[in-house]
Structures are given as C-alpha cells and as structure tokens.
Image 1: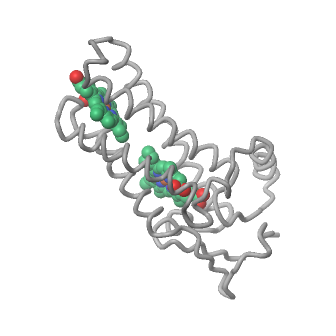
Image 2: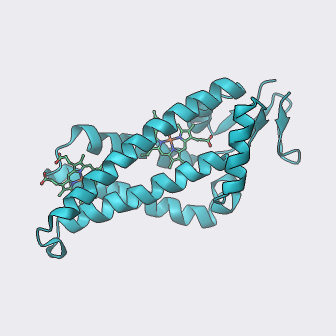
Length: 186
Ligand code: HEM
Ligand code: HEM
C-alpha cells in the first residue's frame, strides 16, 4: 500500500501537491535543451558552443543560490545527501515497497548533486580551454570530454530512473516537472 511520507503536507483531495516552482522548471528544461545542444549538436570550437556553455554555468550558479533561498522543495536542506536514506530506498525498490516522496528522493538527490558537480567541471574545464591558463595542456580537453561523457551516462541513468519510478509509483514525474504539480493516485 502507498504510504505518503509526509502526512503533514498539503495534499488536495485529488492527491495533488504543488512541488516545483516555475524557476526550477524553467531551470530544468532549459538545462535539458542547452546540455543536449552542446553535447550532441554544436561543434566544440564554435562561438555558440561557448555561449551555450556560459548559459549552463549561469543556470547552475542560479540553482545553487536557489538551493539556499528558494521555495521549500527546491532547497538543498529538503534533499540533503543521505547515503542511509539512499540505501533504504534501494531496499524499498528491491522489495517493491511503495513510498511516495513529495520532493526529491534520496537516490534522486544523489543524482542531482552528481549532475550539478559534473556540470561545474564541464563549464570550468571548457572555460579554461579558452584562456591563457589553459596553455594548450592537453588534459584540460580530456577532462572536458570525460566529464561530458560522465554527464551523458548519468543523464541516461537519470531518465531511466525517472521512467522506472513513474511507472512503479504511478506518479508522472516528468509531467510534474512541467506543471509543477505531483499527482498521487492510489
Ligand atoms: C553543457 C556544457 C557543455 C557541454 C555538454 C560540452 C560538450 C563538449 C563536447 C562534447 C566537446 C567535444 C566535441 C567537439 O569538439 O565538438 C567539447 C569541446 C569543447 N568545448 Fe565544450 N561543452 C560544454 C561547455 C563548454 C564551455 C562552458 C566552454 C567554454 C567556455 C566549452 C568549450 C569547449 C572547447 C574550447 C572545446 C574544444 C573545441 C575543439 O577545439 O575541438 N564547452 N565540448
Ligand atoms: C527528457 C529528459 C529528461 C527528463 C524526462 C527529466 C526528468 C526529470 C524529473 C522528473 C525530475 C524531478 C525528479 C523528482 O521528481 O525528484 C528531474 C530533475 C532534475 N533533472 Fe532531469 N530530466 C531529463 C533530462 C535531464 C538532463 C539532460 C539534465 C542535465 C544535464 C537533467 C538534470 C536534472 C536536475 C539537475 C534535476 C533536479 C532539479 C532541481 O531540483 O533543480 N535532467 N528531471
């Protein structure tokens, strides 16, 4: 049986809770577009690659600030890195126990920290490639590309996890990232 882990949360009779504020949603979907463009479509040595890359860096900087001063579910304090919680979640999934989370789950939180940190490494190494500080050191380019590869792998896992949990818990998580509202059905 489903056990909403936040009995005190305001869930409407239809089982709806507003979780993602508009800025989080704009952040997420513009990051999806910008990341995909640079990773798959735009040449690394073009001007537009650098502008898109700066945009990603700015978006991540915004997200970090918003993690401290933003709305309830956007705050890092709402989804702290929690290895114990993450391993409990693995056990829940393994035994097909269903527990609904209003905001990010512990495993989801680990993925978010991983993605944000990886995007910082991508943007910093990309920027250093364009400055004197780079001095043609080959490993900066290798770092940039390795971090992009890690981000692509992580994104594939992120998308698979989102689809898996949406089907398992009967909560349309991608839709919630569009509308801001999580709809819980029993
Ligand atoms: C989401 C962020 C980014 C992604 C996904 C990304 C992805 C990539 C990929 C896949 C390559 C290698 C393929 C190619 O050369 O076409 C590359 C190369 C490169 N990137 Fe990025 N990048 C990002 C951000 C940045 C930023 C912020 C900068 C600089 C301000 C930057 C500068 C460069 C440079 C200078 C190259 C090497 C170009 C060359 O000489 O071939 N990138 N990037
Ligand atoms: C079509 C592809 C994608 C879908 C359907 C998707 C879906 C989602 C969903 C549903 C969430 C919320 C998870 C939850 O309920 O806890 C989320 C969060 C997140 N996703 Fe994605 N995602 C996609 C691609 C990406 C990409 C390409 C990136 C970055 C490179 C990314 C980075 C993030 C981040 C950073 C968060 C945390 C949001 C926040 O609190 O700021 N996602 N994604």
